[in-house]
Image 1 (tube, rainbow, N blue to C red):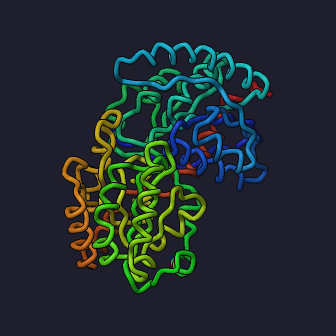
Image 2 (image 1 turned 90 degrees about the horizontal axis):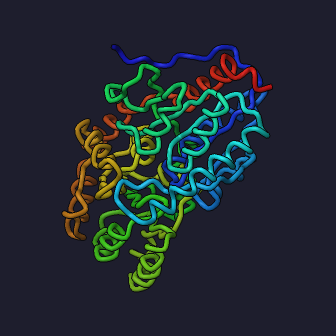
Length: 391
């Protein structure tokens, strides 16, 4: 069966749409991209977002002007733990809370972008016979979306070929949504923000929204040679496990001479300036979460990827391998990472502009354009064709 690529919507009604997903920034980013697309439409639909009380989505979504409701949820773990018993008990409560919110809002359709927070809302939507669209960023359904798929009306996939792992025909290939802010950066504006020289190469180092202690430590111990090779924007994280890293890196920065210090921008969190960071970066070093690799593909950014060991379903290693096999990235296993090895890879990459250009073109070749529009269209289709009785 050939891949079914989505080509456009039916005439949409003015619907009420419920959206859920989160727990991590990787699950929130595609939801944000779809919301932005929906908000640009006329008339724009009413949107209710159901998320956790303290996840990334609780901070990001209300800023978009979207109504937000928190539901209880438990983290889904693939290993035995007493916490599983505690969290399992939260899921029924989350379903009841989601039922209350959905009954009050009366959505025509529901979109879930994954993460454990999405499960109670998807089950509640199924109980209420609301059409559900789920979106999967990786090549294999994550644990939450494997549960959600049982209740889904349609499954949107990011990667052609990943449908072979499904036991259903209700899928469509859309690609992975990208937030508008990611594409909005200007290189000259970014250089002024960070006081960097556009004639010099810039490397963006990130461990994701939470940060990475392992990457931070490699940068800390190799900071001086790294800064001789390139200007560096380093997002080190603002989580319990990385706050001490930020303090250590800040102290190390003060020990540098003025020239090297001027080539280093240390950030705990990157928000709306992410587009500028990407615009300035000649090379990106980071984890291989679905959100990161999707942005790299959309922007055509060469990268050195350090997959998170023991990621659920080994998805980060699979993501990194996909880019590496296409010639878009180099892969450095965390177990093999050292300051010297990291610096060596950066120097070698920056010393070969033609290779960086080839990696950039390879990355661009992996992305599917307009995924956020396609998913928004699919959601409107479901609202129009199956959700009209919600009014």
